[in-house]
Image (cartoon, rainbow, N blue to C red; front, side, top):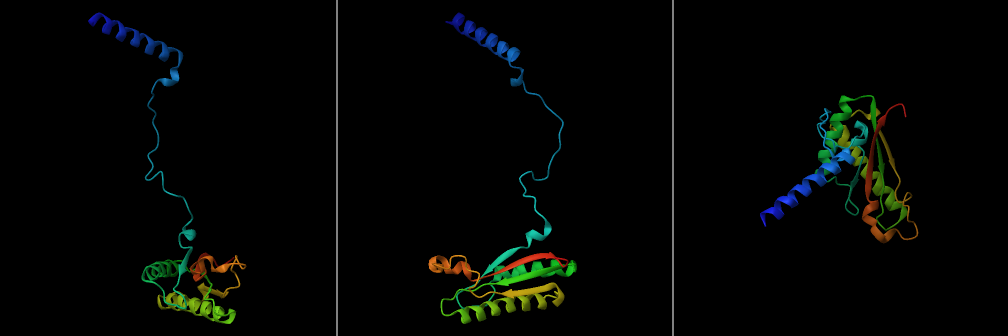
Length: 161
């Protein structure tokens, strides 16, 4: 029995030696390289970090607490970078009338603008547009998810654009 085990081990060692000789790729080599802080971190420009959509309750222009924290951070960033400006694009779909949707989107854009001004963002850094329900892509059946259309989109970019 022990002769059989020794013979099996010897055959296995010979097989591995032949494999290593004919296929040197199987050998493991160590190389000197670079160490990255976080190799899985997504690379993005600083401005795109601040692009975001804020969502609202139906008929409301109140900014949620989490969005207020985001806007405070954005305001700080804009005050430190006076060469940048923020674009506020407001949308609404309340389901009553086009005129009502237009007014609600205007209120939402004004509320976001007011919040940024309170946090010392200059008026020259703020560009505000409101669309009502005119930018809804699914005009034939917008009721599928109307909460998606109650939003304000925030874009940060250079003043030269």
